[in-house]
Image (cartoon, each protein chain N blue to C red):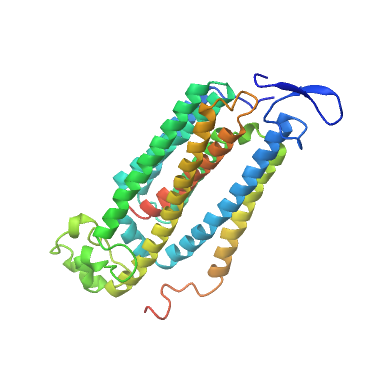
Length: 101
Length: 267
């Protein structure tokens, strides 16, 4: 009846992975990848967040309803950020608004 | 069922159930499922709450990339990296606290919760050091904001600034480095646009810190409940909910760290 109990070794492994990925994101920031610096940083952060959600927050062992709830949140976040970019990207994305130049 | 009690319910038949089981739930599993889904719905609103700030960050970062790169470089990578490690560590201790509650280890639960609160406090302490540094260098948006003060070379135009960078003294306390490349923004524009970066910096880290303070407050209550022996292997929902909240706060920081500290470090 009580929830799934993860082994301590799993938690330690996830913690170590998160620390290594933190070091990786700092390291990657010092390499000139042009436009891809941002992408790499976000992929690493997304992977770290996934590890936390999946193992620390027990979503892996949660019901389908809980998984759906989590997915809904991420889906609407994607809509928010995606449509923001579509909206601003489709307008004159000038380097500087007139009042500053 | 260590805490199970037997009593006669409204229908007249006697049966045993856990004292933490509310009357409108049939089973402990059903009650826990309701709590987990409810907590995730709350976290969903939190995701979109921070999402609005991330969206604002995204647009301004594209618009004023140079300002974001310059301002981001003035942040201490040491403190930021240390805080990331501290917060990830606190997520581990929180996960251990939930695990000990699941396995009915009362004093271990309390100890892990206290350790989590200590790590959370360390994070906030580092944040205080960083905020104090911003005040000292006039990097707080508003009337006293002074990007050029910590950045003498950019009082010239962007092109001249690059040429003058060799002669310019390092910024006050070395907070802001001299320009490493040609900037698209001149000094006046930087003075205005770096304030947008710092506005977002203070709003996002401030809201994040507020969440951590609330999280520590929640944990104080949970720790007291754990100490009083209110949890067992069948009922540890409050510990798990506090854990979900704490891990969420950790996730927000996982994104804030590269977005605020690592905009452009390679030049």
